[in-house]
Image 1 (cartoon, one colour):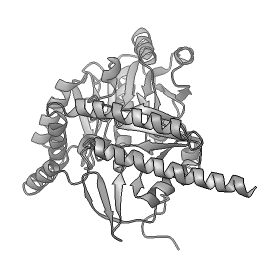
Image 2 (image 1 turned 90 degrees about the vertical axis):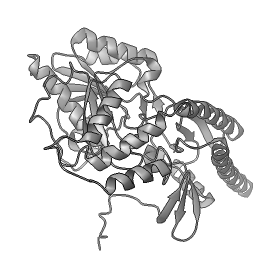
Image 3 (image 1 turned 90 degrees about the horizontal axis):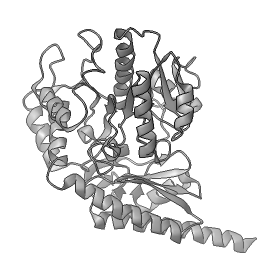
Image 4 (image 1 turned 135 degrees about the vertical axis):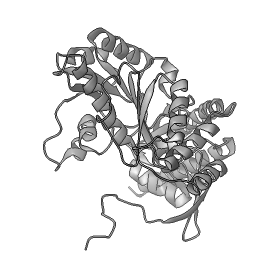
Length: 399
């Protein structure tokens, strides 16, 4: 018999009833160190006082009006983000997949209004992940996710990451833009190189294409910059954001330059809930915290510390861990043992991490995690490694 909640997830058998900072507490009394952060969503941890205050204050005044009217919190948030980024304008939505779909529309409409309606295709990348809506799935290109949902939406080609020559060879008269994650999260914490991003920017400028960044995973401080593209200095024309934007409250956006968004006039896009007073009120509070002096710099500093600890862990346990990857608080460890078994072992030890492609476990602490918390997490990874090594030794002895 089917469950009341549609069984589309392989959920772990644990129910959480409350969270505090870096920890989650289950209904059976167990405490867990949360290095999943809602899959890079809970940027400020659980029940951050500033977010509780913003949610309570806005919730007692006004939740929703629709986009038939001006929304003060949304206008404030948009102006702040425009001042902080490459973007001149943005559209607020409810999720990352919606932000991707909106960005695709921006790119296609740009080509249309500039007299190139045949240009509708996007060059994307192998092992990417852009969401579960139909165009987002086609842009992702993962056969496992596409199976059973009819022919994939047309207009998406996939190149290997960090190979500019292949990308250049793919460009034709129907190409509208290039969509890339600065760091592939779901794909296994695979980073683009600055040289590759510069090459993509040059190709877009040469051929009249738009460069589209998916910063759903990497945005809002997670890499030690407000947005990951700021490391390379290579700005996009369009960008999708979500996850950490609301600190756990559902909100996303697609952002664009004035030039790229020239075709997005009244009637070209819409959302009933998108950017409502409650969502944008909380997102402004998140931004307030991120912009406090030294906050994001501290994420970078502690991220470098975490990277060193993970690299040392891999060296100590080469039969369990193969490679440390990533930057800031968007890191991962490629495992030798099955990553799914590692996730279960860590749960038994009281630590939560999500899995990713290439047999990787993701290490996504909340941005508030200090070195003591990071050491606690690395210590649990150490315990897990020792338990696998003990089992390996026992198995070899029994042969």
